[in-house]
Length: 118
Image 1 (cartoon, rainbow, N blue to C red):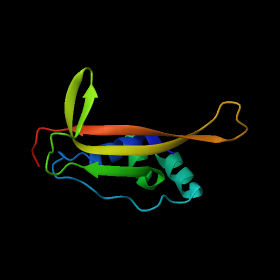
Image 2: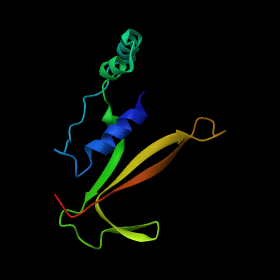
Image 3: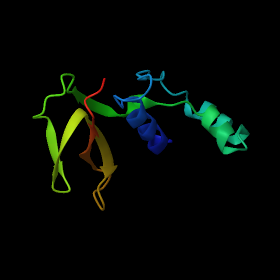
Image 4: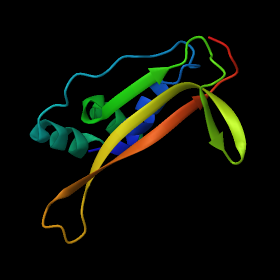
């Protein structure tokens, strides 16, 4: 539930340029019955966001940093070399169409392009 929201929060929290960097991960989500009651009680988007805790534990994440800002840490994007400060590889799973319940595993790669700052 709310995986898209939590993925957005994870990407923002792992941004090496956030001020200050936030690296907190929420405790496990409550039982479905507790969530159902919280969702039923919320009558605005803000109340719903407050009622449903962030669950970043659902993501399998690999992270690599470029702390010395090495120039060979580049990705080519749109025909130009981009220096990457931090790279994330986030695993996700989805059901295969007509797969009888089987799941496929894929990854999203995110590169934080940087200007050489902390």
